[in-house]
Image 1 (cartoon, rainbow, N blue to C red):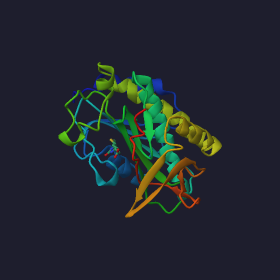
Image 2 (image 1 turned 30 degrees about the horizontal axis):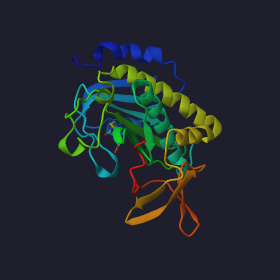
Image 3 (image 1 turned 45 degrees about the vertical axis):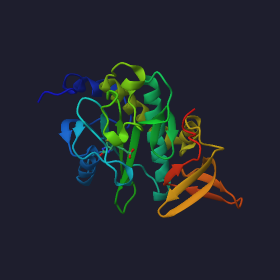
Length: 271
Ligand code: BTN
């Protein structure tokens, strides 16, 4: 089958030299969702580090039940299976691993620098260029099985996003004014994830927590977090040792969040 990724995909694995990621990489022209397929592989005991890449997705999924627009020849859509020896309360740290790895790749390929928006988005000029969907596969034993799904808007041109995303989404191509080689992006991403994941397994997350703070402009800002039906407002202070965002509330108590939707009165994501 002939599709965009075919000519270079075979070389990618040979050039990776990773410790944890990419011994098995599956390239597909089309799939419903790379996360769904990675979860299926996990159930049949696929090894850690399996990567699923698709040229397009027919049912790409985002957070909070949203869809992820995934036409062919434009975005990077991939999922990675990990089996870290983690307690469930440490899972947010893996989201940080994914976020730091993805933003370092985006900064390598973008002419303008990006910001991390807690918990899972990467923005350039206040517009979304990348989203992360980390999912756990229920499993009673340790290590837990996780799928990290990453979508990067690489080669969409202005106006190519669906109507409702046109004002809020951007792509590397829009930013740079020229197309990006998606295989190069994937190679960088897998190397970065391998490095950050290895660091995390070695130091328990200290380094990735610091890097996350470096790539975010959140701390010190007043924010509201919607978590279920509750909205909590306070000042964003830091990421704690479990990878949660800590808010200082108006009553001077601190509260830590492992998920939610963040918002701010002023659009602090634009710097
Ligand atoms: C979000 O921003 O809401 C998360 C988007 C995650 C999209 C990626 S694309 C590859 C992987 N497969 C999916 O179905 N979703 C993730």
